[in-house]
Image (cartoon, rainbow, N blue to C red; front, top):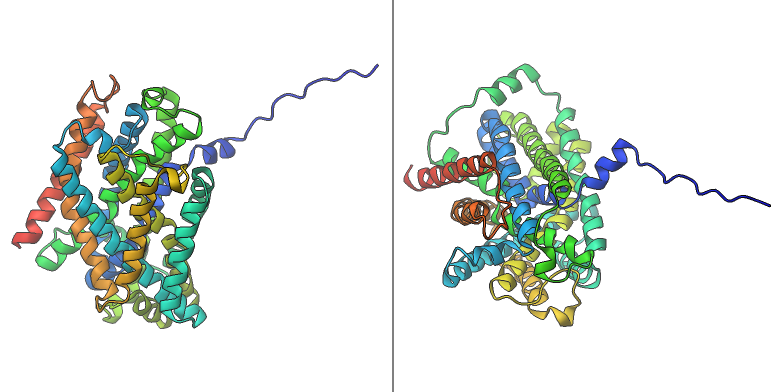
Length: 426
């Protein structure tokens, strides 16, 4: 007789457990460094040198606190951010926010597609117009065709494209003592250009579209587990909240690390050689090649294209989530097209309009920078609403955000208000 013994369950290594925790927080953090963000950071480094390096150390904890608050709202309330904001804002105000978000995201998508096409044209020689059509078409098809788990898995691995910018920074051999001084001894912005750049950096890092995306992804995860009603999704598991805090923290750190190294690379190459004006992402690649080497320029280009595939679904999806949640319509990347027509309609429309914008005389760099400034001005008003929700024990089912989280997000809100007012007045 042969005895059959069950083998003990395989235990995951600490590294495997850590990687398993990473998900919506990492994707949201990486999506923050979309082509718009990359160009904004490049402009900051080219125009102002290393004087803005310190912002990465400031925006990291602020971004982490904001994103975790949005994640907590999604996990605890069982609904997306717009659903929660309906309890604190009149619907006309929320509709206005949705329209502003849709407009800013659509401009962002158009500029992102143009930036991706420009650098891909350098690598392949294919006409940029064809590349825009190809990139946009692939993203629309994949977003409609595949369900949430498949999309989330791909987005998670696309985040690795951003490592190209960390490698690029080391290729230019920085003088680390001087870099440390610029990083830890901040210089206060002076003049309209520096204040505008600061608002753009804040708007790119603490972006409204990420607030909606983060909360909605928490809902999507619960739906994949069969929790298909709001009542079933309400309440946050303590261990899941802790895991998401790690996930969001890693995503925010990764995002700001990449931001830091892009500013550093362009400051030590473009700025030091008097190249302060960039008209397109192609300009940035072509300027980097003779200064930092062709390999560094290639990494910059590949990183920009890769993260574009990550960011554009996030941009279009966040506007779609915001609209359908505002009107309490069926939504979600796990739904089929005919069951969530409004959701997919808004998502596809945003990408199509973004594609159409690439055919206009609007310069991509100007559009990218402008969308970042718009986000910087819109974000503090949204953050006020998020704080009101996060503090409400009834809405949050007796699981409100901690006092430390509320203070940190309050500081982010105040800082963005001050920077925005300074930009208008200075």
